[in-house]
Image (cartoon, rainbow, N blue to C red; front, side, top):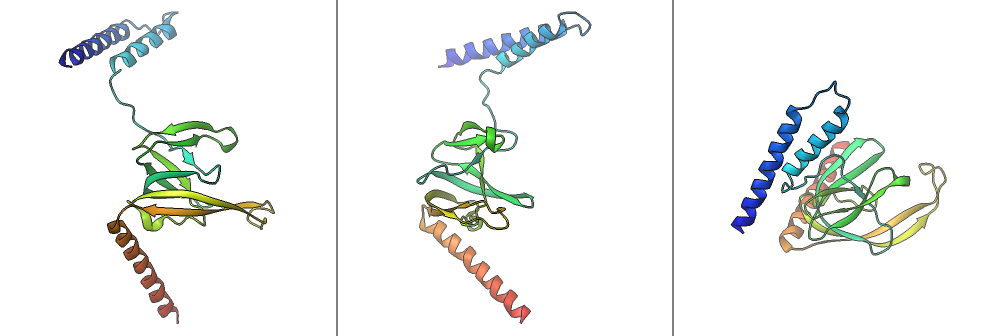
Length: 194
């Protein structure tokens, strides 16, 4: 094992040296500059072969494509940057999850590994505010068609029915306390209005 690590370290060190040599010889005025730059950048990537990839950028999104679709995740934030489209940011747990990246009509399917983030639309029927920082199983149980309305410009809409589960009694108590606090705040607000 130690020998393998030494070989990897030596290879990475050699690649870094090669990259430095290639960069030191770059001449922006040379005819072959673009290719020489690509070669130097390739050597740079070789020098970090053992490094782990980290997720950056906007997380991909998940949406049920069929009844029975589900994910395990920890709800970490509610993204409200767009007035008419809110989404939850979720950290994948237990299992990887297939999501989409890019425009809906041309989305790329990608696998989000456990520990990485994805987003879920804040469906009216899926209120996850009480589950922040708690691992949940979210299961799309059933889909019904609703008639169009003014907001959907007359287009029929899908209404998903959900099953949300938590693992432990401790988490159930946290959720119950959050819901109780919300109920108290609503009652206090009503009392002030009257």
